[in-house]
Amino acid sequence: MLVAVVVGAAGLQAQQPPSEPIRLLSSNGVKAVLDDLLPQFERANERRFSSEFATTVSIRQRVVKGEAFDLVIATVEAVDDLIDAGLLARATRADLARSGIGVGIRKGAPKPDIRSADALKRTLLAATSLTYAEDGASRVHIERMLQRMGIAETMKPKIALTQGSARGLAKVAAGQGDLALTLISEILPVEGLELAGPLPAEFQSYVSFAAAVGVKAKSPEAARALITFLTGQAAASAYTSHGMDPR
Image 1: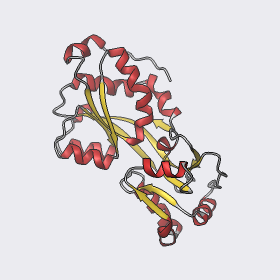
Image 2: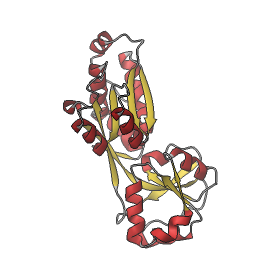
Image 3: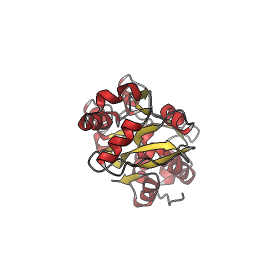
Image 4: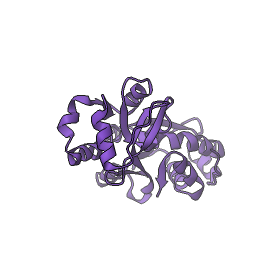
């Protein structure tokens, strides 16, 4: 997807040698969007990014331990906590987008009925396996849903927790599991997987993401310019195409 990138390219190029990449730590929830948008920003500004994607839990731990970085994109709760801890610059904070939770199935498999709360409950009880990320931002919402349905204990033997969602999604795509629950923005880009649909309104929850520059960033101006681009109108369609709502 192509969007216009308009930032002060000359100023960014002067700030730091182009050979030294700008270090970005980002949540998996926005990986597909950044895979689209970062190359456009890099080409327009002749800057390179060194991007690492992980769960928000992992990113928070790495930042707290003192790992070097320029920019963090994570859940709004994590970003705000890191700002309060003096590790991210409050003045640079910006909301990016949010993603709801969906159900992923192997591409071509019969699509389960998840259109209502009762239908989803029946589908979960009939499934042989259910996977979601142990350290994922959506876990708390998924487990709250199972509790509300009254099937948390019944589902326990069927649940396969993974570190990060990628492994669980890959297993479902390969036919080694029935259902994957995670952010819609993480389901859509996986080859061999398809979105059965979002959770019904009664159980839907959203995970919101924000960005902020590190207080010790080596390239703060370039990092701020990327945030400006990611929050601009031109980038909005990229969020939408990857199952997210721009903020």
